[in-house]
Image 1 (cartoon, rainbow, N blue to C red):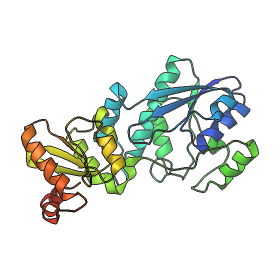
Image 2 (cartoon, rainbow, N blue to C red; image 1 turned 180 degrees about the vertical axis):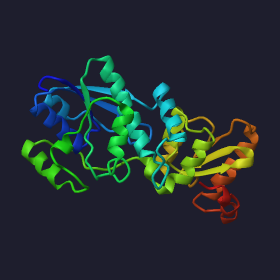
Image 3 (spheres, helix red, strand yellow; image 1 turned 30 degrees about the horizontal axis):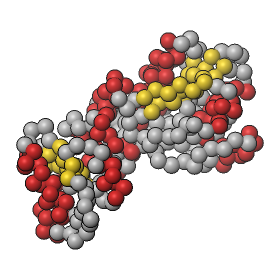
Image 4 (cartoon, rainbow, N blue to C red; image 1 turned 120 degrees about the vertical axis):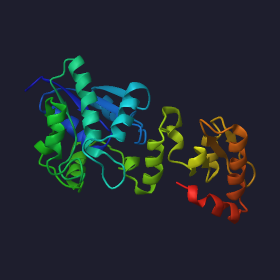
Length: 287
């Protein structure tokens, strides 16, 4: 297997770093590929790991264009179901591995490598899920963490290995927003209403959200100054003011005057001096 070309999926986390290190020690020619997915916090990959290991890093942006459209289509009709929220973990893995496979085939790679740890994720890394994924992807997959006999949710072994290799790694955090139970109702509605658009994705997990179904009107009320700044980068906004939040509004059917009327109501409701009566009026529409 020496000198075979391996395309290794790279999240920037500890497991994917250790996988690359193992692959190099085995004599593989390694290239890292990072998939910038819509519902995972963007990571700063400009650290010293890739440079020190002297490997190429390929980044595919899945937040726009055809890659984004395919992701949303997969999210609407996952073949293997979802977790406790709307997270289609098995289908998502297949989506990622298929993108990597396509790049690998076009560029002469012999296999793709993944840093998954058996038993670490209950849906996509347990039971027969890896076998299902491998069969669907139909391309050689190397699993370094399996070869290293690393299993389960404990990171003790990985941390010991990182100390041995003397490289830094980011603290785990962020995760996939599709797994967040608190966002399930909001995300399901936005998905059903075809409101996941590349340009609107930064708004989907900030603020208080309201959707008035009979008007097909979507509103977002900022909760703090930081969110107001993000919201005010968009059009269709009631600007924030002293003690008043910014409010963004959207509808493909309702006239602007009607939208602005309700947006101003919501701004009044969640101003520093809250209007409890209006809060109650809009409570049924909150996501």
